[in-house]
Image (tube, rainbow, N blue to C red; front, side, top):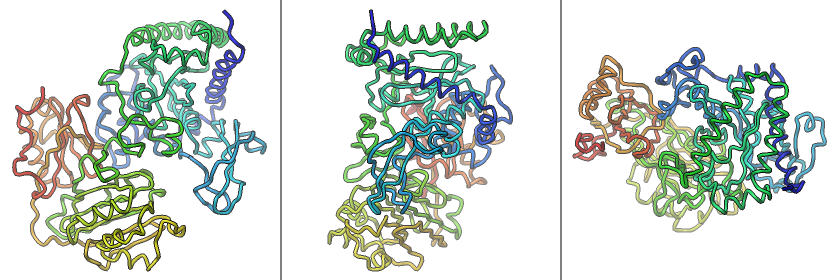
Amino acid sequence: MSLPSAATDRIRSRIEAGLTTVQAWEADPSLLFECRCLIPFHLLRDDDARVPEGSLFSPGPPRTEEAAEFYREDDASYQGDDLLLKRLTLYFQKHGMAWCNNPPCVKCGCKDTEGVGVRGPVTVEEREGGASRVELYKCPTCNEETTTFPRYNSPRKLLETRKGRCGEYANLFGLFCRAAGFECRYISDFTDHVWVEVWSTQQQRWIMADACEGLIDRPSMYEDGWGKNLNYILGITIDHVEDVTRRYTRQFDNPEFTSRRREICPDGDVISDSIISNMNAGLRVNLNQNRISELNKRSTEEQKFFSDIQKLRKWTNSETYSEGRLSGSQAWRSQRNELGNSKNDGKEVTDDESTIPGTGSVFHVETFHPNPENVSSDFDLSITVMPRSDSKNQRDCIMVSGVSCAVGFPLSISIVVVDEANGCILQSRSFTSWLEASEFINTIPNDRIVALCGDTWQDIDKKDVDMKLSRLGGLLSLLGGLNISSKDTRINCILFIGQTNRHPDWATCSTSEYIYVKTKVSPKETISLKLKTERNTAPRVISCRLFENCMPLKTQLLATEAQKRAAFLSFWETNKSFSGYTTRPNAPVYLIDKNAFPLYRSGSDDGGWNTFHVVPERLVSENDNGIVEDEVAP
């Protein structure tokens, strides 16, 4: 059986490109040391030293507010170095690199450059940086065609530029993993994506880690979540290559899947397996016998695992992944058919948001109090609104007393409503047009504080929209009489902080730069707070476990819902900086603070978490006294 040389070359060249990448990770010890010095280990692990192999290690609470950014509720499912990998992946997604859809114009800074072609590397910098190709862009504002985006492959150059797309992310993240001491292999997906897998010494298996999404151990993400039609996926290290496709699909024996694989390798898996076998033989020439034995053992176990899951025809409930791709612009993801099967019509909606009729999206839980300790005395309420392009994530474009609370996506209008009497966040909505936004604004009671971030101009110049927007006291006058229209190129966005049907002296507005308000709130009466029950809901992050002197851990694990509630309320009387707690049957009581927002859905597959947070009593049902024990699912 012969294989056409074009197909042979395609598989072989893909393997060789991956080998070049992983060999570069090992080539420069000084680069690994430099990279290791950049990793904030003190924020990513709970101990002061790497966890010894085989030790049992349970994640504790974040030691600082800075560290809380990388802690998640499901951390308890991982131990030791696997937990470090989980947090390192999230850290890298947030701070390791910046995603580049298209580079800004080098002459005028315009962010709307358009791709016009590709060339090979010609400059010394491009060649030394290992650029495989150089993308060319034209600026629609100044018509310059001098902006380029070299697709660098050199890990040293990537450590310098820290920007790119999935190829650059996987390359540099692999270097970070090696610098952290992990054994790492480069994963090459023939449907145009790359990520890494890391060897878990504790679990004796490979764990996928996608730095673009900040996730590990979710192999169903590509097929089940993004909706990719997979065919070949190869795992490549400096001393072995494996076909790992079966880890990422439950359609391997499906005729359509087989057809897609034959488009890559017309004569079937026998030939592709032969190519991989020959490559492995060459890679093992200089290996010692111990390493060869270890590789053989791993390969045997992995093939057994693949044979077992090949019998499955669909992802289990615990494996399924329902989100489309999040990294990259919507247009870019749509072009690659990676938006998935979500119900948001391609709009970027995260796991803590959902769609509602007449709007773009809304948080699963909208009401949240950022400062419950201040409701009985005068306190400072601070609000920041910034252009969406300047924020680290969509939630950051509106912040109330340090809580990121905007919901939405690019080219939408995000609105947050705050109680003027106590600073409680009441609503967070987004809208795809000013008509929808203005209709919502028309329903907000008088005097409510409103923070708005809008970067779409659809129907803003309609008369009825203008009339309803006038309810935002001072908005139109603060805009300085600008004739706003959908064709106005002077305006980047509309940012506003003020009140409905009032024009306080602190109200402010901008069409370009962030705005900030700090105002004194003086409660006119004593405001009673009460725990609000959010069933099947979990916080974004936890603060810490309820202290031992309040309820010992062993007691917490056996306590009823009523006992946990009583223990928290007793503790909270003298510790009102906390916003509430989250728990589930046979689990501890985890305290939450302002970093917990937004709260997200937690179904039975996540263990049935319930969250209780303090808000003004008038916002809580009279019948809400927690969860009665016989209501808790077994």
